[in-house]
Length: 130
Image 1: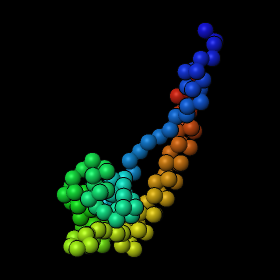
Image 2: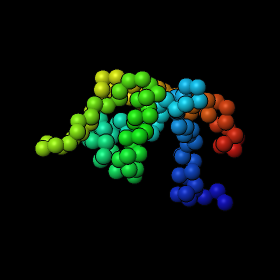
Image 3: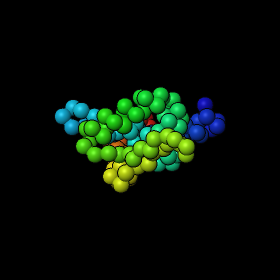
């Protein structure tokens, strides 16, 4: 049947893409990746580890542990933390944390574009039945 149903038309215009979690490791140990980047981006936007963790569906303690482990591995602070009090606490990215996040975001964007180019080059025809 050669009729162009909506489903068939949508399939024709839906392209294959690569998804990859880009984790940077050293000696088999996690250094930086999409989870830490998501935490940092949330803190950059909200100023709060607690609200970022809640939005990601994780406990504050888990988020804090992930960030601390990353800082320990990298050897520098990603966040400046302010303890609570009359005006409440909060957090913000250090200059190094901000720079690392920006570079990682650019790296991830470029890497995904390259991966999709390679997908088209090596597998595009096979996936499209050509």
